[in-house]
Image 1 (cartoon, rainbow, N blue to C red):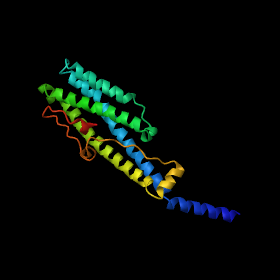
Image 2: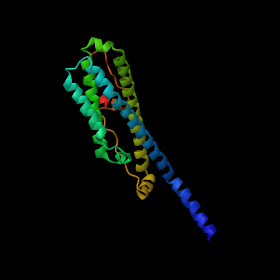
Image 3: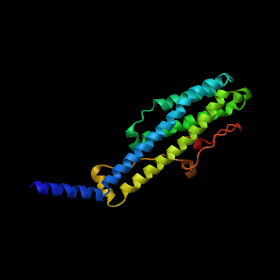
Image 4: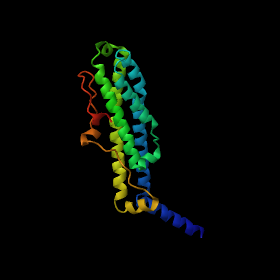
Length: 206
């Protein structure tokens, strides 16, 4: 009986590996890792906001509307409860994306305002914050692109035969993905132009 149980267990292990179970596990972990990096880069951007606002305020105190927009957008991002369950909830992911897009747009308006103040543009701290923001926006785009690709690979795997049968048995489901205004938005780094006074396109800073 002991030998029989070992044979059954061995056949079960071989069967699971052959029907894609192990690969699904790896793909699922890859999606989670990619999502963690997305959150990390968005948090990096949110952390820049207070210093940006305070620095611009020092030169443009009467631009209160823009400061309020940025502050409120950041607060909205911070109020969202984002966890592992967000990966499987299309509505929550959409809310998260919308909030991040709102913050991106508000930051673009803040940068446009800064163009009207030559002394601000020459300020060393502001220049440093500009460089950090630009680098962060690039990192956000890269992280989002990797997440999109990880989800696409996972979804493709669990939809193909015979993996779809294994996925159904073990409860693996299609994961929602970021939506984009155009295909270039998930593969092209954003242009954060601090020299023209023109806000970056909204789709490129989400």
